[in-house]
Amino acid sequence: MKDRDQDRSERRKLRAMYKELSTEVAAILYELDPLHITFDGIAPADEYEPEAGTILPRLRSCSSVDDARRVIYEEFVHWFGPDNAGSESDYQEAAERLWAAWQRSAQVTESS
Image (tube, rainbow, N blue to C red):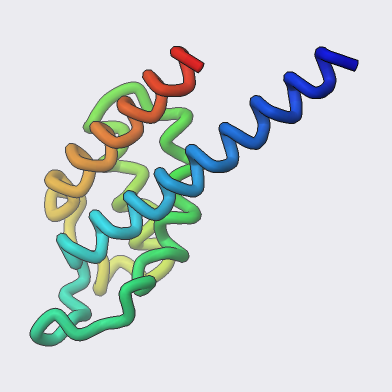
């Protein structure tokens, strides 16, 4: 019984951590606004939540900022098409910041 309770507790911690990370990823994308969809900073605060939701699970397969940039770019192409997504290099800062957030969350997970 103790193991089951411990497993549940760990799952709750992971869900909470990934929820926070998803919020952070969406906030980074909102701040950087790679599609330039905000006008004078006016856009719904959750504007990039769907994209964050598809980027985050794919970060698990990344091993570098370059991998993260590729994933972010691929997701923006998927969501908005290649003409609107721009070039992969446009996502460098987003990749650096998302990769740093991902690395911090991995450290928290390992220390839990």
